Length: 178
Image 1 (cartoon, rainbow, N blue to C red):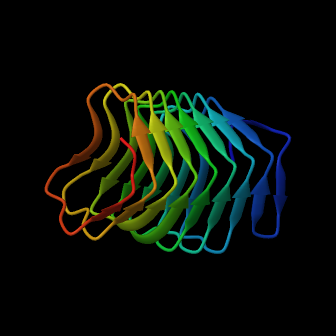
Image 2: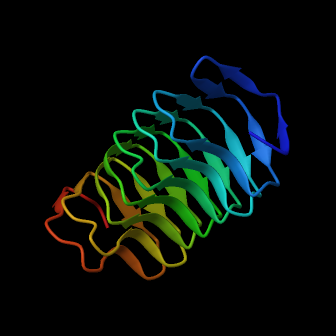
């Protein structure tokens, strides 16, 4: 946490109930593991609301990220993280996973962004997520985003595509609603 942040609660391996705004990065975890981020609000940060870079086994629950370039960003080698009931809205990218695997995303909402969920070179599991009202795409599977599993996700009211798959192979889609 840096810059304009207030009402911070940081405990051993936990960050909760913070409002972080007006920075380059809202909450940035680098090469860190077994952390819990709960009920944080990140907004108006010029790059990322929440970024995990080279992290594993972290849990993000009930966080909100809006008005950032990217709401929640899992960057290179951020593996085996769990994201549940987070909201990303009014960003260019809502939730973006880049070059990572074994993350589990459940019941997250991404809306009013350009792209709701974006994957690049990633292999993850998506269950019961909602992506709606985005100005471009609900779920974007970019190059080398192979072997992902999508089950019971909802993607509706997006301007161009519910799911857009570009050079991504061997993905499994079960009972998704478009």
